[in-house]
Length: 349
Ligand SMILES: [Zn+2]
Image (cartoon, rainbow, N blue to C red; front, top):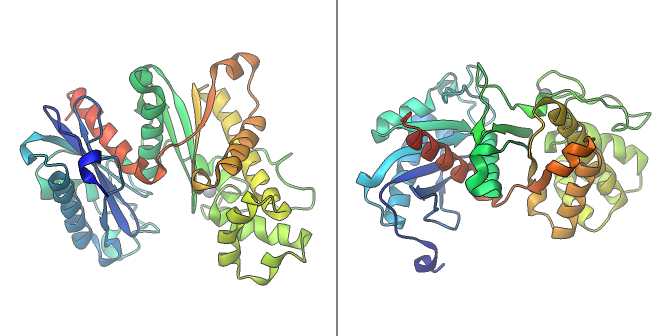
């Protein structure tokens, strides 16, 4: 890659964004004028499975690496934005029960934000990964008007991550659990078929958005049902793990079973957005996740199906936008950086 084309000169001061994932960290630099100094994905191994100490060192390595890549002096860095998968508190304390990516006992209740802040000697601003992606989608879409607009994002992955942004700020909630849109229960009438069992989520709720609109929902709930309706389908012979992953490719080719599954997911997200319409009445509804990486005709069909299943009043329909979350693989790091820039600009850090 020709880095001379993709690296910009930093302005008077910068923030660094670090996105911590199950296998990789992704890093970026955002300058005081709101320009990203890196236009591509810059990754290093996250080593979260080796425990907190290794993981914090790897984040520090990502920080140093991105400053070197962008020729940014350490003295220009005012703050660091960090995002990780949840569940974690609003201030980056990993759940006391652990989490999918943080299952070692040493991670339980670990303050990853505080640990990185101590390691780097710089203020660290924390968001969970879905909130960071939502924040990036919001700022990218609205630009200079971001602080006067509101949005709701649904990010479909292993689970369903969400983010609610009001006047350019992520709504965090008293315990840091606002915007957990995957666990919002939705009306199932018109979503499920008459003979379809009510899906259950790993969180213990029945019929919440994640139980349908997530990879886990496909494996546990949707595929088992739809394979009974299409008993001769080639996926019937595949292990469920593999079948679930093949589904998007089949959807791109208009396979009827795959379209039935994705239609059901789109309907579930439409029901969620209908709740959002009556709750915060946002300017924009963003959709992210694996579907954003699908073929353009397929992701547009999915977004349209979500839109058709979101019941807005005429006034809302005229005011609202539906869009895909851009640059999804960089959205976490970029959103984390946006949060850090906002914190510095607001004088809170
Ligand atoms: Zn749930």
